[in-house]
Length: 216
Ligand code: CDP
Image 1 (cartoon, rainbow, N blue to C red):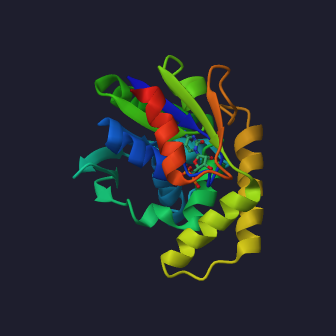
Image 2: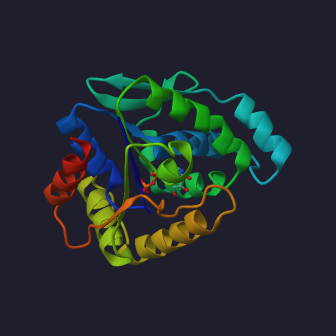
C-alpha cells in the first residue's frame, strides 16, 4: 500500500504524513529532504546549477541515502547525516531551484520508487501522485492558504529559536509556489484521482484522521 501526499510549501505535509505513517505502521518518506540534500551540496560547493555540465558533474559526486533511526527518516549526503542542516530556509529555497532541473529529478526518481516498492509508504512531495507513484492506492493533495502556511512556518521557526519575518516568509512561499507549479518538469499539481484537502481551518488531528481513514 502506498499513499502519496502532494502539496505546496508549508501545507503541513511532513507533520501530517509522519503522524499518519505512525498510526498506520507505514514508513514515512520525505522526498523534499532529498532535494534539500542536493541543494545543500550545491550551496556548500558553490555549484553553478544553471550550467548543465557543472550540475551533472556535481550530481556524479553526490550520493544520497535514506535510513531510518528509531522510525525517523535520516538523510545522508555522501555519508554525512545532514537531516538537521537541510532544514534551513536558504536550503529549502535552493531546493526549489535545483528541483526544476531534469538531471536532479532523474537522480532521485529511482531512489524514491525503490523505497516505495520495498515497503508500505506514505511519501510526500510535489509530484508523487502525478509522476513518481502514479499507481499509489491513495493520493492526497494537501494545501492551505498562503497566509496560513506562512504563519505555520513562522511559528515553526520561532519555536526553533530563530527570529523570522512573517512578511518575508509569505513572499518566499509565494515564490516557491510559483516555481513549483510553473516549472516544465514535474510541476506541482493535483493528480486527477487525488483527494483534495484544504487544511486552512483544520487541526492536525483532523487531517491525520481523514488520511488514515483512507489508508485503512
Ligand atoms: O517542507 P517544504 O514544503 O518547505 O519543502 P520540501 O517538501 O522540503 O521541498 C523543498 C523543495 O523541493 C520544494 O519547494 C520543491 O521545489 C522540491 N521538491 C520537488 O520538486 N519534488 C518533490 N517530490 C519534493 C520536493
